[in-house]
Every structure is written in C-alpha cells, then in structure tokens.
Image (cartoon, rainbow over all chains, first blue to last red; front, side, top):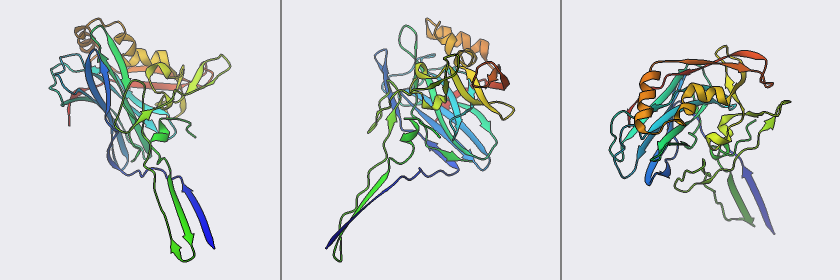
Length: 137
Length: 154
C-alpha cells in the first residue's frame, strides 16, 4: 500500500558573521544602464552596511552616481543611515562607487539596503538596491 | 514580526520536500530555490518585482512602519521605524530623514555639478533629527544621520 508524505519546511536563511551581498540590480535611467547592490559586513559585535553603484556599459561622469547606506535590525528598525554621496571622479564601466553606513557595535542580526540617486539627464531618480542577506554580529 | 515582501526574499522561499513511499521503495524528493524580489524600477537575474507595502495608520492618519518594507522612496511610510541614539525604538518623520540624508536636496539639482556642490557643502556634517512615539508627537529620542564618505569599492 502506498503512503504519501509531504513536508514543507520554512527555513530562515543562514546568518553568520562575515560579508554578504545582495544580488546586483539593474536600472535603465537616462538611456544608460546602472547597476547597484547592498553589502553588509559583520564581525563579532560589529555591523556596517555599504551601498555600491556603477554603470554597466559607459563611463560614469562625475556626479552621475549617488549612494547612501541603511543598516536595519532584524525587527526592521533603521539603526543608522548615511547622507548621500556622489562620485566626484569618473568611474569606468564595471567599476563601482560606494559608501558605507556607520558601524554598529552590538550583537544582533542585520540587514542593509541602499538608495542610489542616479542622474537621468535632467535630475536624479532614486532607486533602491536589493536587500542584503541577513548577517549576525 | 515583519510583513515585508522584501524581507520574504531573504528567507528561503521554503524547502518543499516530497517523499513518496511505495512499499519499501523511496521515491521523489525536490527542492525549490529561494525567491528574490526586486525594488521598484530595478531588475535582477531570476528575480521578480516586489509589491508595495500597506502600512498601518496612527490616530492622525499618518502611515508608520519599517522602511525595510518599502520598495522605493515613494513607498516609505510617513513615520519610519528607527533605533534612537538612546537605544529606544521610535519613529522619525520621512520628511525629516530626507532633509537629513540629502534626498530633499537632490530634487532641486539640475545638474551633476549641483550635486557635487551640495556634497562639498555638506561634507563631514552629521544631522540629528527627533524620534517620536507612534503618535508622531511624543519625543522619545534622537536619530543621527552620519556624513557619507564615498570612494571606489570592489
């Protein structure tokens, strides 16, 4: 007699101290493709977020790339945020400009994402990065 | 407990294992890859767009919650959940946060040179804003936006 058993398991993502990155996101703005991602760096007792942004095919001229980082607790509270910074020099396609949030010296589980204001030829369009994986500190 | 459609992207979408036993013969097992959701206007390999959140409202009708649930700056709540410098949880006004982090200023920039001029002016300056209870009136602490420092990263 056949017996059928189905098991669904909801497993949280693994979270360890170390470095983790979101997937790379792509946005086409002002006829150019930009790419961005969030990074999170933790050691035992410390955590910091980083936002990275660049262009895929063309050289980013000064001021095209904006970035600010956000670090969140596992409960979704914003723990720290940096002000926006812009690239003051050119960045070749495939290279990345970035900025880091403050360092938090607590133990916990953290997430980060960034906001990247991108030059659209007449102003700035802000795009989020994807959310980083969670990391423990 | 988070309700974020973005946060769900970080948990395993679920590992679904099916076991089919027929007599003494073990059968099929399969696993589903974690889902990845993208913020508004952004694409990523193998990802699907996240949905905009619905936030609760306080007595004054202001939306409140975590900015981690938002999928774009426009979908952030009026009151954003933060950890104040005194360690207490509370909320900052989105408008205050955007003044502090340069988002408001960016709306007035007509050229990249405008952005770089603003950056030179703002360099090294921290901005502290008030943190409130969910009513948006009772002060519970402060939140500091630190100056960003940019550079090439790997």
